[in-house]
Amino acid sequence: MNRLIRFLFLFFFHISGYSVFAAGSFQNSLSDSIPEQAIVLSRYIQQRSYSGNEYDAGMYLLNVCREKNLYTRIFTDTGGSINFAASLYPLELKKPNIVFFHHLDVVPEGDVSKWKYPPFSGIITEGSVWGRGALDIKGLGIMHLFALASFSEIAKERELPYNFTLLAVSGEETGGHLGSKIIANSFFDELNAVLFLGEGGSGISDILPATKERPVFGISIAEKVTLWLRLSLDLETLAHGSITPDEYPNQIMIEALSRINNRIPQIKFNKASRRMFKEIGKIEGGLKGFILQNINWIIFKPFVTQFSLSDPNLYAVSANTITITSINNPSGAHNQIAQSIEATLDCRLLATGEEHELIQEIRTLLKDPCIKIEIIDKEVNSFVTIPEDFFLKFETAIKSIYKKSRVVPIFFPASSDNNYFRNKGVPVYGINPIIKNKALLNTIHNFNEHLPIDKLMEGQMVFEQFIKILIDSTNIEGDSVSF
Image (cartoon, rainbow, N blue to C red; front, side):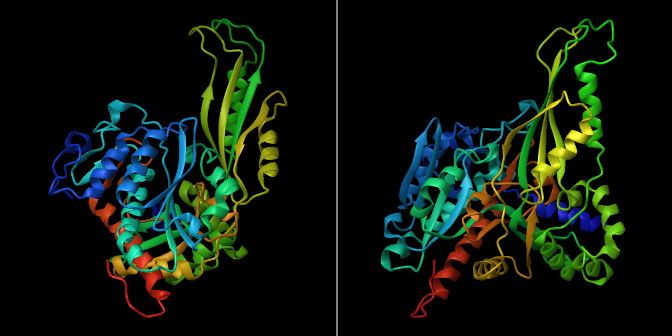
C-alpha cells in the first residue's frame, strides 16, 4: 500500500552527453550536439516571467512561432502581460480547433544560493535544461510549438480537418485572471475550439508491482477548486516583549491555526476520483485493486480513512484541504509585541459549492469572532471532462511512443487554468506526456528545476503522433500523413 500511495503522489504532479551551454552566448548558432528544442527552451527560461510580467517571454516565444511559419494572433498586450495564439491556419477561417495551451508565467526562484545553477540561466548541462519554468511549464509549451511546427508545410500543401493552435497565456500562477479567464470570457468564440490540452497529469513507471516495465500515464479530467483566504486579527495589548499579556494577536492566531492544522476532515470521493481509483484498481489487481475499484463502499471506509489521513498525497484527492501558506506581522523591533497578525490559507475543494461549508468549519475552529476571514480569490466552477474519442486517440498516441504503457483518467489535486475552458463545455485534458520520477517532481516550484532533454523530445513526439492520428482518422482518401 505504501507503494500505491507513492504512485498516487507521483501521478498528481507532474542523460548525460551534453556539454554545459547557456543558449544566449551562442546567439543564433546551434550546437551539433544540442537539439534546437533545448536551445529554444533555454532562451525561453532566460526571459524572467513572474506573474504580471510575462511580456518579454511572450514576445520571445511569439517570434519563434513566426519563424516557424505559424499564424499568430495577439489577444491582449497590456500591463506587462500578453496572451497570444499561434496556429497552422488563421483563426479567421473558423476551422475546428485543437488548442494546446500553457502559461508564460513562473513562480519566484526563492533563495538563489540553493540552486545548483542560476535559476534563469537556462543552462544546458547533465543532459537537461535548467531553470525556473523548465517543468512548470515552459517545457510543455516548447513541446507544443515544435509539434505544431512539424506540420506547417503539410498544412500548406493540403487541407487538414482541424486547425491546431498553440495558446500562450499569462497569470496562471496567480489564478488565471490575466490570461485564461480573459480568453475564456472575451475570445473563446474566436478560437472555435473542440478540444483543449493543458497541464496536469504525466507518466510514472516502476511504482506499482503490476506496472513494472509498464509506465502508467495519468490524464487529468478534473481538478480541485481553489479558495484562498486571509485571516486577520487586530488587538491592542501591552507592547513590550518583556511582559507577556494574557492574550495577544500572535498567541491567539497561532492557537487558532493549530486547531485548523489538526482538523480531521471528512473523507469523500467525487465522480472523477472514483473513476480514477477504479482504473488504477484494474491495473493493481488482487485485493488492493478490488478495494480501489470500490473505494467509496462504506465497508472500506475505516481502511480508506486511515490511509488517507496518514498520507498527504492520498489525503489531497479525498478531502477538502487547508494549508497555512504564510503568517505575517507588521515590521517592528525584536522586543515589540505585534498588535496585528495575518495568515493566508490555501484551500482546495473537491467540488464547487463547498466553500461556504469550509469557511463555516474554519470559523468554528478559530473560536474567536475577532479573527476576520476574507476571501482573497476563488476559482471558477469545476466540471468533469468525461473521456471520449479525443481521450482515446491521445491514449493511442502515448502508447505509440511509450510501448506497453497504460493510460488512466485522473482527478488532479492541484488547480490550474484548465477549469476556465472546461466550464465552457469543451473537453479539456491535462497532460505533460513525459515520464517523471520523484526527484524530478520535487523540483517543481522548488530549487534546481530542470527538464531532461530526452523527455522534452519524447513529449513532442507524443503530441506529433496525436496530431497525425487526428489527421489520418478523418482523412477521406485514407492517405497517411508522414512528418
